Image 1 (tube, helix red, strand yellow):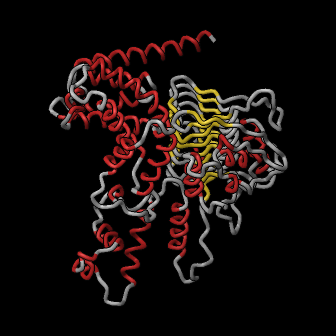
Image 2: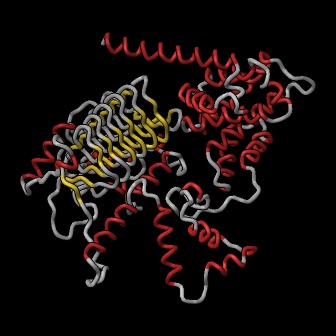
Image 3: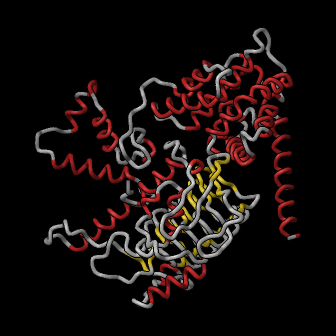
Length: 540
């Protein structure tokens, strides 16, 4: 069905890219628009749930441009779920995560794009940062600009160089009119590209209101055509103090709903409308809205029910009582609301006393390697959802189970570091595919290293073998060679342990000399790869 707001639009898009709607996933779905067809897209799912269009070559877009595969710089980090449309060009040293890029998008060097949706023909210049943003067709984000969560950049708009756009800001080229619709100026004139890029993320209904009669155009011409179209009907009143001297577009504000009483104060009605708009935006903290609603509910109660009654009946406390206690403490951080999801919605509580990592570990130990590893992935996913666990929890449990299975081959002795690595490489021939399917980014990869640290700090055979130098270094290098843990995660882990110092027990493996030698070699290797990439660019 149609997504009612942009927050849900993003959440559903990410759920589909995480393959929760299987078999309705991008790599199983060759999309073809109906009237004014843009093109058929054929995707492959790469590591970390990164989807790329591989249908380029031999066919052209509706505007005559040749369709090509996306180009990504060698030093750029891609963290799924992520979808790259055809003709996308990503520069060097960029970071993309949990985002969707439509066709013909261009990102220059050193750009950060997180939790964002870029529709067709979007240009993001060098050093720009986008977090929780929707950028419509033909829009341009100039160099060094920072666009915060909840912002929407309308079709053909320009955010100027070095501008820091405040969160939940809407920029549009449409002139202000009476009874403005909530999404006026953002999708009424959208081209087929918006439907195409939205469909690539599995949410084509959100952008199906786009004007299908209009054809796609290149980035710069998109901006100029959009501007000419608006100027032909209205005078574009650009808010230069917001979008910058080289920017284009005005700030859009929602109109108060007719549901409010006429006696209400105008400022109060406008504030309510703005708050509603924010609550429908990407990145909004729903726990704040929930706190406000719960406090209002308690104020309106006139049946003598109070918080004192709840506290006196602590033995029979239900979920609502726990919520009330949380809300009573205004100093509680939003992350402590373990019974709420990231949008503040109620989720099934995790069972008390359940060690999810140990349970996941046991599931892996009970699995027979004669069965397909895909069966185990489905079982892990089922448990993960039932206990609201994370993929990091899954990675920890799997890594511990793999080490357990490896050490089962040495029932009467502790293997040497060399024998341990030989057995581990053989085991990873089966388990490597599972790691690749549950590792979504550096957080999950760091969780694998944390699992090894947990084993080393515990008791038993695993602690004995990992405590011997250079066993940990060999295991870490093997995981890196098998592309289970990349250098980004290793460097992040190393930085965390370095800050803790030598007094921390968790840092013992990090400060081992073989581990330090491996980190030094890895850093030199990474610098050489970057240098080779620069030389290749210079030769071009």
